[in-house]
Image (cartoon, rainbow over all chains, first blue to last red; front, side):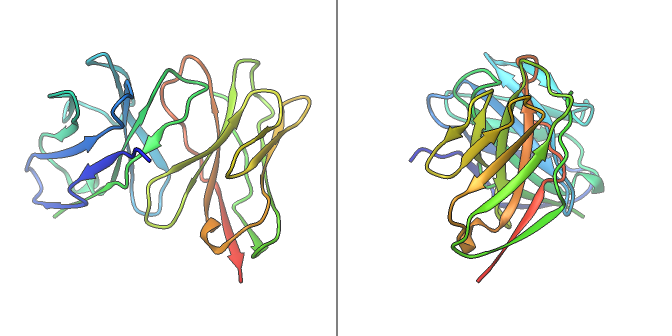
Length: 115
Length: 110
């Protein structure tokens, strides 16, 4: 069964450093998403991406964040200058078609620890 | 966005049916009802969704009230693997994102 994959599974970085989280969505999917979940808290939407541009973003997704689909398979989330409060699980998701009647498929997540 | 209300937690015995309720009294006519779950230390996983009619798939059934102001996710025979947080989420055409609440933590007792 096709699945979303994410690398690395765990990333440790120093405050102020740049990190890139990588995702490989399901191959025939057209819509891509990033969510995050701070330990013990709710899942929060960050950004959605379609046709090589951002289609929706939350207030969390400020100028420190960017997304890119550099080739036909990868989808990346970059945090330019990490803060302690960026420590969280980051989940990538993809869907085949537009909401609302289509499910999103999630990856296993990347645990980001900012020291 | 229309909101949902779910119990914080529920307990059930293994191999018994589980009914997880969700209230969404402000649902609009174009809102779909989605259910996802998150097993411990894993990413969220799609369970089922519906608009007006009851729905069945290999994982669960979704029963939607006639006025659509509430719905119930039914796990027909819970296993220990079904222990997770279950989220009821409303989605409309204008939203790409999923808006998550606190969900219901389902505890399965052997």
